[in-house]
Every structure is written in C-alpha cells, then in structure tokens.
Length: 264
Image (cartoon, rainbow, N blue to C red):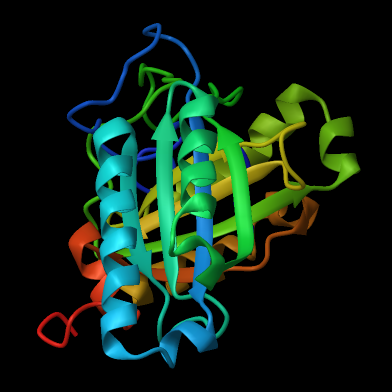
C-alpha cells in the first residue's frame, strides 16, 4: 500500500477510525485519544474436530465474550474466511482506556475458548490528530476521536505501515506537498473511507490503516493509482494486508464452526 498519515474523509479526509460509539462506551475527555486494537484469530484444527456438543459449548463462551466486549467498548467483527489462509476472524475494538481492552483479552485467554484460538497477528494503535492539512476540504475539523459515519460498510481492508527515515527528513512543507497529491487521489474514490491510527512506540508499525467500502474493486483501483504517487516511494512496508467481510457479532461462532447445527 501507499497511504501514509493524512487527514481523510472518504478516501482522504478523516483522522480517526470510522465507527459509532457503543451504547455503554465510557467516554473520556472530549479531545482525548482513544486506544485501538485489531486482533486476528484462527480457530485451531483440533477444535474443529471436536464433537458437536463440545464445539457448541466453546461457541457459547465466545459469543458471551463478544457480547461483553460490545457492552464495554466499541467492537466490530469481520471474517477473513476465503480471503486469508491463516486468519478466520478479525476484531476491531476501541476504548478511551487501554486497560479495558487488555482486560478483555486477559478474560479471553482464561475462558474455555482461549486455548483453542490462535492469534497470528495483533496491532495496537491510538487515535491522533494528523499534522497534515486537507486542502480539498478546507475548514474540516481535525478530530482526535471517532467518526460517527463508519463501521457499517461490507468490507474492511486493514494493514500496518511504516514510512522510511528519509520521509521524516523532509520538511513539513515538502511532505504536505506530496500529501496534497495523495489526498487528491483518495477523494476521487467517494465510496472508500479511510481510518488512520498511530502506533509510534506502542507496536512494531508506525500506523494501522483501515479502509472501508462496499466494493473491493473500488479499493483495488484506489491502491493501484496511489502506487504512482510520489509519497508512496517513502513507504518502507505496508503488509500483511487483510480483506475482511463485516459480520454481526452473533454470527462469529457459527461461522467458524462453533455454533449448534441450526446456527451453522
């Protein structure tokens, strides 16, 4: 991928993950940052071979944990079955307090389903105000918190990203000039929304970028055009990439084979 830290709405104008607050989401200061966790799970082969009653019990435990997650923080679920060989389910969780997210994952590890879920990828980040100006939408508010217009599209495309050292050696004005081109390309694809979060000092990547849209072909075209932008030459890495299909939380257990026969 070629996207870097930028203000973005649609493909290039919002600064934070596009999701609506959960009903019981505990809100912090109006301008406080939020912690963001992308977790990628795969059910073990041994669990798939269990007798149906045992698998159903694991499914109930997983569904209960997911319900607890949505009651305490913003939570979205996605499937990568058919698009990624070593991941089944993706969870996107957001809260003002990182300890709420980590406590949920501790509970997952202690639960009956915990030993049967492998987590080959995990990305931690936070919301943060972008340093770049969106000249296409002058006057657009630079937000540090969540947008209220997202998390509902059919597909999520997510990946970690790191910029090269020479990118940071450029002046702010020079980086803004390159980002102007980058943002202009993004605004041509009105059906794609982008969410950039930041991982400096928190995780191995510098950014976690998540695009939302209903047509994978639109995202493909956007990425292809972004490859030609000048800013893309300063991307050190932007893989692995995940194509994820939105799920209702109640569908997760049945999709991975842990529901009752009526749910599968």
